[in-house]
Amino acid sequence: MLYEGVILKIEINNVSKSFGEKQVLKNITFTAIDGEILCLLGPSGSGKTTLIRLITGSLECDAGEVIIDGIKVPHISLMKNIGFMPQSDALYLDISGYDNMLFFGRLFGLYGKLLKQRAEELFTLVDLSNESNKLVINYSGGMKKRLSLAIALLHNPEILILDEPTVGIDPVIRRVIWNQFELLRQQGKIIIVSTHVMDEAERCQQAALIYNGNLIAHDKIENLKTQTKSGSIEELFFTAKEIGVNL
Amino acid sequence: MISLIIRIVKQMINDKRSLALILIVPVLLLSLLYLLLGDSSYVPKIAVNESFPSTILSELKNQDTEIIILESSENTEQLVKNNKVDAFLEINNVGIDIKMLEVNSVKVVKITDVIKKAMTNVNPTGSLTINYIYGQTNGSTFDNLGYMLLGVLSFFFVFLISGISFVRERTTGTMERLMLTPIKRSGVVAGYTLGFGIFAALQSVIIVLYTKYILKMEFVGSVPLVILIMILLAFTAVSMGALVSIFANSEFQVVQFIPVFIVPQIFFSGLIPVDTLPYGLSNLAYIMPVYYGCTALQNVLIKGFGIEKIWRYLLMLLIFIVILFIFNTLALKKYRKL
Image (cartoon, rainbow over all chains, first blue to last red; front, side):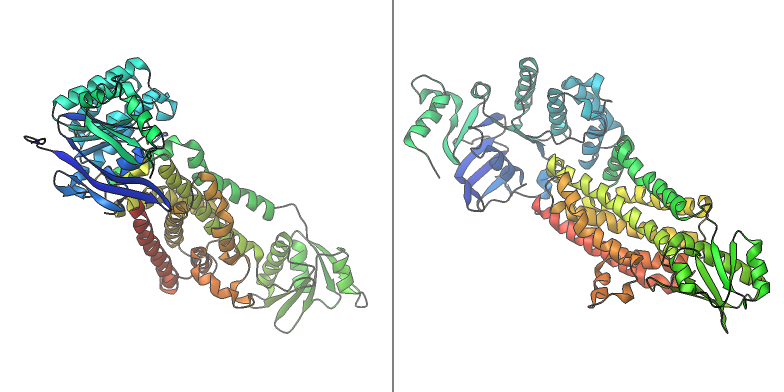
C-alpha cells in the first residue's frame, strides 16, 4: 500500500479549471502525504498557482475535488490547519512586521502572551528580529518573503502550501528556508511547494510536474530521475514539449 | 473583526497622508470657503427711494453701508445692472422688497444681514422678499453650500480612502490571505466599516465642532444629532468605497469611479434644489445616500428640526448601510465560498 501509515493526506482528484474559454488545468490527480515535501514543478504559466489556489480553496474546481484529511475543500475547519504563503508577498506595507504578525495571529485565534512569544520565535527563525518594528514598506524583497513565510508558519499548521517561496531570495537565506522546510517535514507536516527552479526539487520527496495545465508526471524524486537518460528531472519537460502536450 | 479594526487604525496612523486627508483637509477646505464667502471688507451700496421710511434708513446708516437716495424718476433696474448700487429697497405692505443683480452669495448674505438687523429694531415681524434681475432663486446659496459641504466633503474623503484601501487589499493579495484564515466574510466587511468608521466619526466630530465654535456658523439644531447624521453618512461612504473597489483593479480605477459615484451625488446634495429638477430627475435623489444625509443636515442645521422629524432620512441611511453590507459580504465570495 502506497499510503499505509499515512495520517494526513491531500487528495487532488481529477481537478480541472478554466477561466472563461481558456482551460488552465485538466484532469489533475495526485496525492500529497504527511512527512513529505511535494514540489509542484513547471514553467511559469503552466498553472501552478491556479492549482495551489484550488488546494487552498481560494478558487473553486470546475470538475473534480480536493480532499484534505477527508474533508472536501473549502471548509472552515481546514483553515486553521493550512499555512499559506502566496506568490505576492501579501503583507500590509504601512504597519510594522510585528503588527502584521499580530494581525494574522489574532485571526487564527492566537492572543496575548502566546501570540507574542510565537511571533518572536518566528522572527528569530527567519532572522528578522532586529527588523520587526520597522514598517514593512522599508523591507527589502527578501525580507518581505521571510516575513510572509513566518506568517504562514504562525499558527503552527499541519499543512503548508507555499507558492514560489524562494523567488528573489539570496542563496544563503534560501538554504536557511529549505532547512526549515526539512525540519517541518520531519515534524510530520505536509508541505506543498511550487517552484520553477529544478534543483529545489532535489530537496523534496515527491514532485508533480505540470506542463500546459497537464500533469505530465508525479512520482518520488528518485523514480523521476531514473525516467530520464541524464538523470535530470528537467528533461521530462523537454520530452513533454517534443511530444506536444497540450490541453 | 476586532483585530481588523486594530490593524486599520494602526495603518491609518502610519499613513499620515490619508489621515490628513480625512481629518485636516475638510477643516482647511471649510475654512477656505468660509473666508471666500464670509467676512470680507465689502461695504454694500444700497439705494432707496425718497419715500423710504426714515426710521429704517437711519438704522441702516448705523451699520456698515453706503446709502444712496434716489429720485423717483431714475431707472433702478439700470442702476443695479450697471453695478452703481448692489441693492434697491422698496417698502411694501408686509415688509421690504430687495432687488439685487444676481445670486451672489457674499453680497446677498451681507445685504440681507444688514437689512434684517435694521428691521429688528424697527419692525421685527416685517418680511424680506428678494428679487434678482438675473436668476430667480430665493433662498440663501451660502447656507446651503456650507451645510452641503459638511456632508459632501466627509462622504467624498471617506469613500476615497476606504475604496483605495480595499482595492489595495485585493491587489497586494492580502485579501486572499485574509480569506484563508478562519475569519467570517461578514467579519471582514464589519471590521472594515467600523475601522474606517472610527476615523469617519472622528472627522465628523472635528468638522462639526470646528464649524460651530471656530467658524461660528449659526447652528440651530442639536450638535449630537448633526454628528450622528455625519457618522451614518460616513459609514455609507465606507461601504460604498468597498463596493466600488469590487469593480476596480487598481487605485486609479477607484479614482475613475468618482465621476460616476460622487459627482451625481454632489448635484443631489442640495446644491441644486431637488424639487425644481425637470423630467422627474428629482426621483434620482432617492437612490443617493448624500441626498438623505444632506437633507437631514440641512433640516437640523437650518430649520432646527429634532430627530422626530428627520428619522426617516436616518432610517434610509441605515438601510443603505445594511444593503451595502450584505452586498459587500456576498462579493467576498469571490475569494471564498464559505
